[in-house]
Image (cartoon, rainbow, N blue to C red; front, side):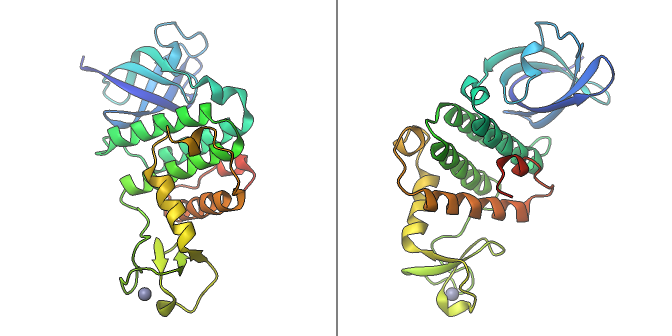
Length: 250
Ligand SMILES: [Zn+2]
């Protein structure tokens, strides 16, 4: 029987029968995986680590005719900080929901997506306050969309391609900024300061002080960026994102 090993983060699980479960994971090497885990009621220590959501494990998988089976799993990171804080857990589940909605088996960019997801969960687990958590998730939203080919256009007007000046309008539908000459709808004005903030968050790595313990002065800016990305992702998502309801911000 063909077998393979990969690192994977459990997104969710559901019952297949009384004794077996399906574990849905996002893997480093093969993108989304749906595998049978035997002995759901009494998981053996050999495969126990992957039963809980939002845990990274190294898994050994046996290929099956219809469904693959998890033969072994060894925990890599349980992101324990996530489980002690309801907000952190909710935002992490929101990220898992987005990964699940946009992923397919055999994703070409799976390693990059896996690393981003892993680093985001790690950063959320370590973040010192709710705004730091939301900032980590905003970076995740922007970077993931970029990897998937839905990156925002923040430099040039999406209609006439001219460079954007001091102010512009953001269009969720068009996925970027529109100059004042190309639109009569000024509802979603976005300043150059905000555009720069977006770029800074997308480009900084998770070790940067913004994501760790920087006292956040500008709550409104952060919430604006997060919500804008949330709506942008919802428009493009092939599935309804359920975890948004947990955040109380739908
Ligand atoms: Zn224009």
